[in-house]
Image (tube, rainbow, N blue to C red):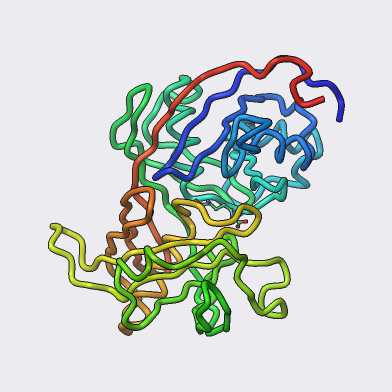
Length: 299
Ligand SMILES: N[C@@H](CCC[C@H](N)C(=O)O)C(=O)O
């Protein structure tokens, strides 16, 4: 690994799905899988579920990190160059977009509460409902949510059939009949789920979801609880794209394609609204710390 210069970082999370945010406007950091894994390591690095490099989309194309601008992304947009804790690259990260947008707003990289965040899955328009230097509430237009039919998995000692859901990245959302929030909490999610590699040649994030219950919150139709085992990470306390997949699969299980679902994960609460095959994810973001990675720390 080439010796890195000192770098400023910010640590943040969205419902406790946590990220190291690395501002790198001109995409000058040589971002290897080893560097990401070291940064995310909770003993030898900062510790996180993933890394969000903050660069302009144009700079990432100029530096060869991206082959081209994804749909809906322009060269001047801020691009969330997302990496999983194991160093793999994923197309999208729903919690990451909220935290990324919050960072961009609080660092004054943008001067509006409405802007587009670039991702490998395409442009993701965001709305910042409120923000200060620490806390924010952000909605993300998550784009198309495509149901792909049933697929089997063995996870947490259960043999389940879930719904394949494409939210820009791949998910298997398993709505488990009769699963209570307490029983969900008690499951052992330490081992990676077995999934059908023909259906998911690039792997998948696997969600365990309780059946929908009616919600007593104004404007919210249903409520459900979810846990997730993320591709490239392991169990995390939340996954934004997974929450969208879970809401879509849970609505489909009651023969609905539209509606607003409140969801609770170990790290907090979000809301997902589905209409016309597209989703909006709304939830919190917290910026926790700003620091400096010392030159040579990763050698
Ligand atoms: N935690 C993220 C999803 C991150 C990517 C995922 N692990 C994958 O490999 O697809 C989210 O909030 O959506």
